[in-house]
Length: 119
Image 1 (tube, rainbow, N blue to C red):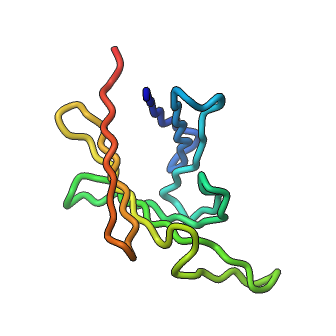
Image 2 (cartoon, rainbow, N blue to C red; image 1 turned 90 degrees about the vertical axis):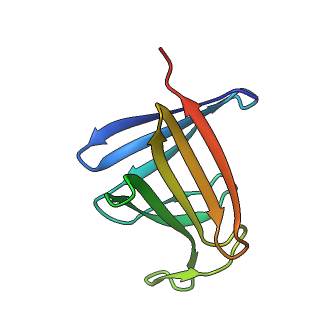
């Protein structure tokens, strides 16, 4: 399987991440915001909310995500479970490689994807 990722600055503090996977006909696009929490649809179709922050002490970006459940049309609430449960994604650059580490927090299951810069 071949995979590529690209981050595009849309406006200050707001990016679009696009994932290209060889077996998928269309790329997956997700927001990445540093100015406020943001909502979007997860790859499996759940509405989620994420909050991204740069952590200078680790020189990385941490994105915490929770499944969004609407109990009331006017009040948004979060549940701790859902299809995959709350997750965190660490984004860092080491030795010219972009490393994405995603963790399902309730299960302590992680996966890591490593991308190299294209010439």
